[in-house]
Image 1 (cartoon, rainbow, N blue to C red):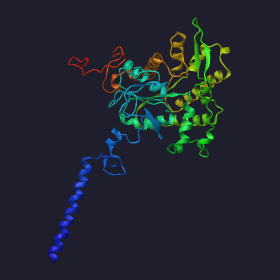
Image 2 (cartoon, one colour; image 1 turned 90 degrees about the horizontal axis):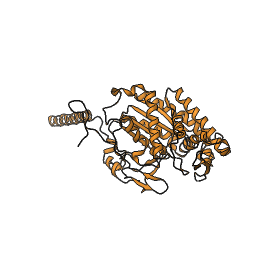
Image 3 (cartoon, rainbow, N blue to C red; image 1 turned 45 degrees about the vertical axis):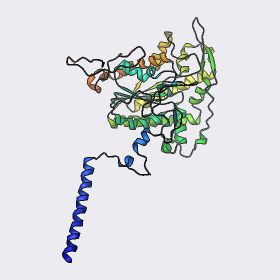
Image 4 (cartoon, rainbow, N blue to C red; image 1 turned 90 degrees about the vertical axis):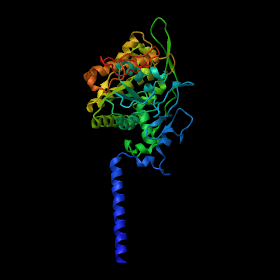
Length: 405
């Protein structure tokens, strides 16, 4: 009797040891197995159901998100919306790209000015930057994004191992939208400069962008250009509590971006896309501008100097795009549509891409070294008449790239 009990106990112990060894071996063989996501558990949605499913998705092209404010609907085709114009296509992550590169050379973060309102996807400035540079550029930009959105996205986009991050701020509304996101989402509670305040304390009284000021442009044609003076002034007014709080958040944003780039060993450049109003201001007679128009230009200039100082304080390269864009306006280039819309035209986005690439090339001499980048994706300027970039096959035995059939 004793021997049978003993044998049973020993056998049970050996089975437990074997199962334990199997568990350890399995964990060793698959150390990156994402059990939290892929397990069949009612508490966790299966991975492919998240990626390809419709849980929580509306019929809109974008929807609210507590971390970044707005997310793009994944896998939509190019479409045209009333007032907004061309949108999409969106890739699997909901960003405006045809595909998601496995290892992009450059990741661009921005808002609607970078998403490319008013333009086809092939004419957005990140896409044109790819054509000019010959590098793989991945755009992570959505209307409504702001500094806190960039921090959240950049931390995660580092997994794509880009060689360079380019973050495009837009002072026309970034500051007030920093405050809106921080005080409307509990996720960003720690980003609030004054924890005693709540969203209702922001005193948001921003006039509609539909309130326009029309100004006659200089030149023989004497064309009339509408400007969103009231909206822009309210969103940058340094006397506004929301703007002041947003400016404090912006300082922390630059510091966070610099830290992420340093920790991940990725180069970083930031720029501030100017408002249409500030670009045109030097061309206009002072008497033709309202007091608010002059006030918004002064406010934007102050916010720009502050952003430049934050960048310098954290060793971040700042790209000056306003000066070169004004020079193009001086030469008669039409960078904006003759409407109240503050987003560039197709030509404006092309011009911005050229200025950004020139500034990047000047600020980062190492960009000229092919060894700095990942493997070549396509040669500079290799695009068809529609602006679509043609991918290039592997080099032949002589070392030259050849287009796939």
